[in-house]
Structures are given as C-alpha cells and as structure tokens.
Length: 270
Length: 93
Image 1 (cartoon, each protein chain N blue to C red):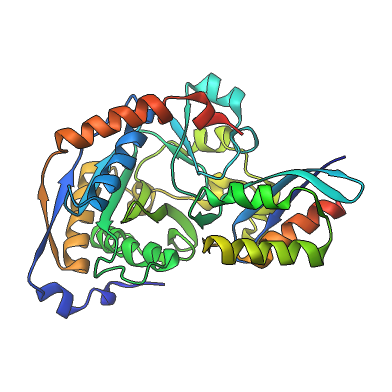
Image 2: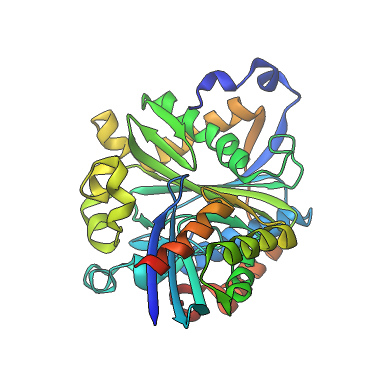
C-alpha cells in the first residue's frame, strides 16, 4: 500500500520539471484513442516530445490487454447488443470497460527518468500510480495502491493500470471508474471463475467501485482529472502545463491507426 | 488432442493455455491472459520454443528458463514458474 506520505518534501521542493498535459481524445473512435496512446511514448522516447500526461475518454468500449484473447475474454453477443466496441492496447493486463464515465490517464517519460530509474515494471506501476492515488485522496476517496496494478478502496477496485518499458520510454496508463455504468461491465466481460475465487465474490461487478459511489455524490471526470493533476504535481515534484500534440505525433497516430489499431487482426485475433 | 487450462498465477494474474498435444508432445500452443511481460512480443517466441517439446515438467521448465535468459523478458504478476505450472495444468485437464 502506498500513501501520500511517499510524496516527500524533497520532491515537492525540487526545481520544478514541467510536464505537458494533453487532453487530445476521440471519444467515438477508440481505435484512434489507442493509436494516440502509442504515438506519445514513441515520440517521448525519441526525445521529440516532453514528459507527458494525457487524459482521455472512450464511449462504450472494451479495451483488452496485449496478451488477451478477445474470444475468451469478451462476450461478443453482449457487445453487439450494447453497441460496445472492442480494441486491443499495446500493454498487457486485463480487459477493461470504458464509457464516458471512465477517465483514462497516461504518463509517458523518457527511459531512465529519475522517477523510475530501475526499469522494473512493478516499480513503474507502483510509482506512477501514486499521483492518481494522491488525487483520489484529495477528493476524499480512501484510495490505496494494490499490487500488481490496481488502485482499490477498501478491497474494491476503482482503477487498474498497465504499462510498458519500450521505445526508449517508460509508459504507464490507467483507467479510473468515475461514474461508469457497472451493469454493462458485468455483461460484456467474461471473467473466468478462477479469477474471482479468492476474492469471495460472484461477479466482476461486485469487486469494483466508482468514485461517485465512494463519495456518494455525482462528480465529473474533469473534477477527477484536476485532482489527479494536483496529485501528480505534488507527488512527483513537477509542474503540469496544458499543451497540445505535435503535428508529428498526430501523423504517427494516424499511421498507427491505419496499420494497426483499426484492423480486426490486431483487435480480435487470436 | 486439444488441451486447455486457466491457471491463476501467484501474483493474481491469469495464464490461459490452449494447446494441441500429440503423443505427449506440444504441437502448438497459445498463451494468453491478463499478465504483463516485456518485451510484449516475446510471448510469441516462447510459444514457438515450446513447439515439439514433451509436455513434461523437466523439459518445459528448462525451456521456459532458457526463454527468459535468451530474451531478458521481465514479467509482472507472473513468474517463470507460473508459465511452467500453467502448461502442466493443461496436461492434467
């Protein structure tokens, strides 16, 4: 478990490094959203783009992990009935359900960055989840990092993260259930019984929660985003400034969309 | 003969094995699941290395260890031992 005390005073008062904030998104085109997700760390790794935190949303989408089988993990019929799209990301981990009540964040740093110098994936998850944990705590949610890659509130998952170390970059992204429709989640995902056994719950729906449910009030994803930006600034000793994607990043994302993320063979096979 | 196993790793992640066995040997195998392994594309190498390997612990363990040292692969939520156990679980189903 990680608490806000890990955001040490030394880090708070370090000469401030600036991170770019982008909220470039394609709500109704999840494949393009995932293409942007890959384009940014590639550009950061090449030294063409600065350290970046991106916030974005998808409308109804299942995002499956790199190693997952769409056929095994997703209820295709339920996806058709609910108009849910299926897209694969380039990072491992489990399938997640996105809708407009779900806030996605992604941090891209150059490999060797002081925050994650040892190139250990588990350390990346832990260290780069701290900003989100701190942001949620600022809102009053009793969030804690739970290895391998979750943020939980009293045993229920409110956010899952994934990441990779490649293209000379360290990449970490997570999705936060702010006010998602959890009833669809239970329909569109096939969660094998073995996965739920040790949690003593009968369905995936019962082991997750939302920020809205934890606070007992409606909250916008923008409010959560602002809190996480504050958490990131205080935890990592950085200043987050609004920016935009470079023309080259958008061009790369468009190319990745055409050659990879819009293709059935990438998203649905094996 | 088609064989399948869903194995829950010690770190809580799922390793799903779908393989074709012929006379005690793995003819082909797909390893899927919600684990983390970098470099991500290395899982294809592991699947390839496992082809024509006897579905026995000693051989599989040797091969999985060789895969990790050859590729410098790094996992999170899954260990080399988990891959070995997941593959052997398919034998038992």
